[in-house]
Length: 424
Ligand code: SF4
Image 1 (cartoon, rainbow, N blue to C red):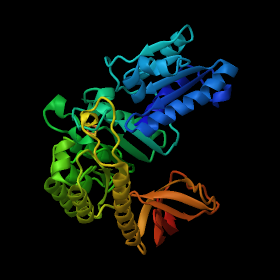
Image 2: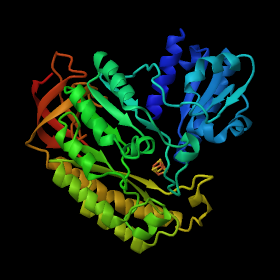
Image 3: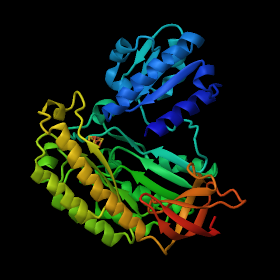
Image 4: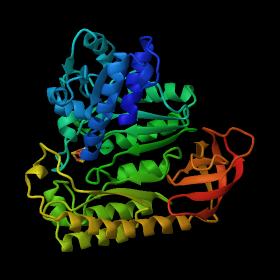
């Protein structure tokens, strides 16, 4: 979502005649922020003190936008008074105006009124891949999460507007579209009384049959058979689902206010693998939530084994001010959190390595992202199941092309293969 927000701010400013440059040569430096974890918050203030030195030399305006700006408001300028503009998650369309106002004197604009979701111009970092927000905000109240406070209530864009926007991306050469929302599975439920996410997937798949679609994030309580069937029946929708589990114990899930229990999650994970052939499943897990006992953590490990996640993103609990969980006693000692984290990542790494190993010998379709950063003699691609895949470069530029590759080897995080042919 942050990448997408940054692309929209860049697109809007470009339309007004601004051009992108390095901070040292810029008239304005804009940071788009995240506040989900405090590491991102610490990084912001570190970066701001670096930018202060730049501002002293060049006089550039410094602007901070996005979730943290929304959460902190004027407080951000109290900590970093040299910041000229603080703008929230609903102010992106006004950014050109706000920058010109900030040139006259510091501005803070964090009202939640007005449409955050609009079809704004976008300056994409990659020509072959795009992000499209289908909802913004969240109506769930997970006890550890600050997102509803900074993104506001859930709002869904009309389906025709999304289909049209995707059409423009496709006309520009985009091959993979990533649909974004805090909970894509409740798309249009508030507006139409029923989720239309499965319909959206089918509509996009039939309008643009040569494009790949991915989506994030799914909420386990709303991820249902209808969506699974739409993934299975729509060839363009990749068979990869990110479904955050967060914890494997019912007691902790309840304290997190997640709205589902372990049996419900397990049932959905099983159904997904039955309904969608070859589905890959990834997840997020929080370790050391207040009150998490060894027994609860064991339940998480057990769920990880039962679900056989292809990938897992694991985090140590860290209270976010203003959330209900921040009022709970953070009673799991840091060394216990770290030790549980090690056990968990030991298991998730093993499962990922096994899943990668199972790919060896298979032929897979992949989208080429560009030359490998680690080894420029290789291309980096992603398979439909979202595994990174590397194969040797020849003379032809394959960036943004669909290819067929035979998988010949697997490492801890990625696959190796040989090119069989270019599909499209
Ligand atoms: S579903 Fe829960 S974790 Fe996700 S954005 Fe909404 S409140 Fe946060």
